[in-house]
Length: 217
Image (cartoon, rainbow, N blue to C red; front, side):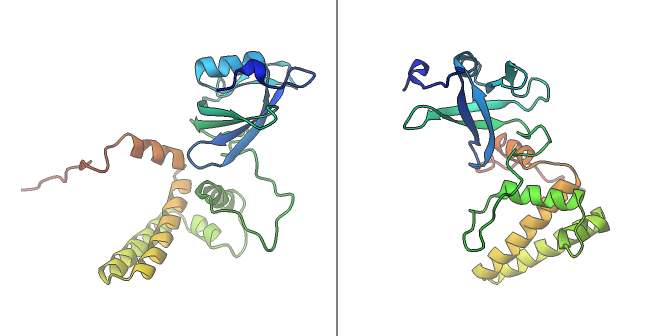
């Protein structure tokens, strides 16, 4: 464990801190810390930064409620930057986005990024807010909840049929379709993936039945 006194701060006493989602690995934001804000972050287990524009300490979530609970802090080989892995209570960006990094500067035509379900969720939400002609996702949102629910029912049936036939490839394909339409439903109902994760984490889903079916007589 490296002591914070051994870190290399710049001439203003600051060190850049890259915040990363501890669950998904998604890059969330880039902020700055000084020794005091880093000490507070470690003591409270919550990210606390130094605002260069306001010249004051900034406890993430103090206003919005979107706290970032620290799982680990690492420094690089030069000890002049930090990577902070967090479990977040809500969007990391002040614009309500899961990540501050969203605006593309360059996209390769030959190289691809690893799939990230959070980014897919953001893209679906973007199609709801900014309608795009010819987009199937936009079409679903325009048709509304009943259409989305109908598609979920259809895709769930397709999963059952493929699985019953023990067709592994087709089952994977249909499960992916079902997952996508469920994500559209979550966006439609303003439910985040984090809320679903929290619900799953609160349950003993492996060994216990969560709901008992109601008996009718």
